[in-house]
Image (cartoon, rainbow, N blue to C red):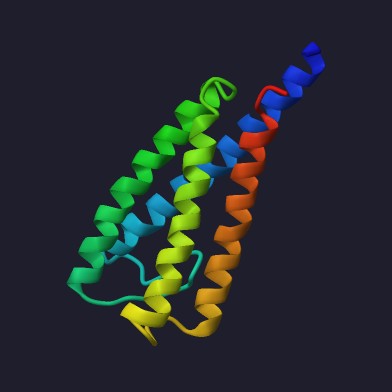
Length: 142
């Protein structure tokens, strides 16, 4: 494999790692601010607005996990080809999030999200799934 191809593979993987790092970092800050009750923003990407202490508590826990995944993706960006498996894991977790939201929307909590919230949230996640899976595939040896 040529050095140019190797560099291109690393650049694609690194770019997707950074997109995930920045996105997850912003979500962690947003969720943390919601958990503190400082803002009452709709959460991205479903634009759901919750209320009450249990919701704020859950957002605080979610913010910690999102911060953790931010760190994992940043770590992956440091050696993108060697740690490309994180791209696959991230893509699969996002796909699982789509399935869980669809199940929640239709069976467990019908009516909690509007159709538009469910649609836009899953379109964003679907795009991210494709992006992470493509970067995983593209950064592999051929």
